[in-house]
Length: 265
Image (cartoon, rainbow, N blue to C red; front, side, top):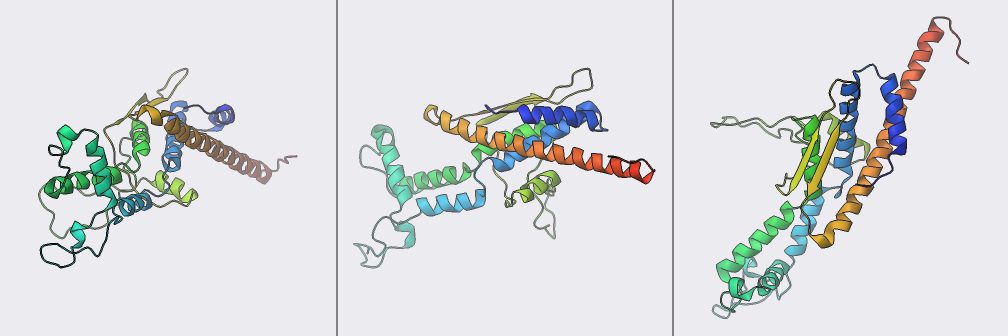
């Protein structure tokens, strides 16, 4: 990612000089919050809404919804209506007719149903793909990071092997509320990878993270722009957050001095 971190670096240095926390713990904490901001800022803003949009788009009928069966003369059921997803699957299969088009006869019946279902599932499941790498990055600093996975219900009789869902991450909920975003999870994809390490006690504690996502070559620039814009916004907002913390601490210390008879001009 390419961002302007000048203001963030300056605020971070000032923050580390004023915080009462151990240096390495303060660095890890701020880095964690920075990555949480990146998580909520990487599009889409509402994964649930985006999933519904994709489902509606792929499921849109493109043929005559009043078509009648040649055998029975009755109106064809909704499960047999030609939809956009069927045309896309057929077009994809046509690129390799020998392997995919049943000897040149095209996809139909069970093969078409399976292919259409697979494409629908893959398309909807890919929502939030770019956030997946960020989740893996956050888990370098908080292994128990579980997004918003709060338990909606608890079974009356717990089956063997049942595990209660983890509570939502309070920091994530707080940051999402700052931006007015819904609490919606995303799937974790194998195609995304994150490596890094936490800062440890020492002379110059350093935190590091590296993310990698598998995208097509013609999508690289677009994906890079998405990450760059989101990270720049995250850094700018986290800079403001640190300045606010330091200002509040300064005012609180000033009040203590004034309460003890020391005047601040």
